[in-house]
Image 1 (cartoon, helix red, strand yellow):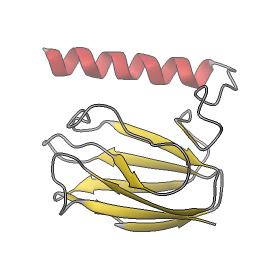
Image 2 (image 1 turned 120 degrees about the horizontal axis):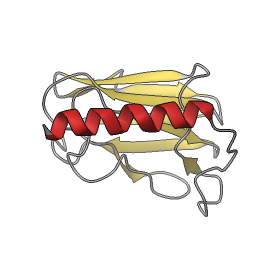
Image 3 (image 1 turned 60 degrees about the vertical axis):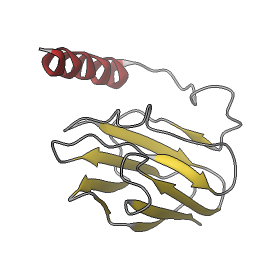
Image 4 (image 1 turned 90 degrees about the vertical axis):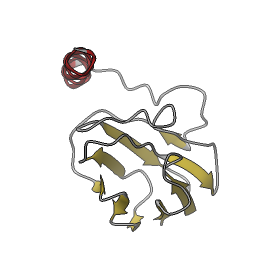
Length: 129
């Protein structure tokens, strides 16, 4: 029942984000990292087999990176190093099967991140050009 409610709320939130015209960048983070609305291409990183796939990605500044949990065990995405403000998908283990986390990084550099639940083995890097 809890998963069904979470799924319904996630669908509602995605629907509202797609219909809204809000250009807010997530607030007070200096434009370094922010969650972005769905759509518009970008790079996808799958969370599956207790790994990030691909583990390492290179993107242009401002490109959207979408992390998607494709398995039934909980995961998360937490920055461990790199320029600018920290980013996180939410609480440790907060991403359930089918959940996504969308991220836009505007500052060039190398960002390292992990799944707190499965670190240090589940880790990756984002290089922003």
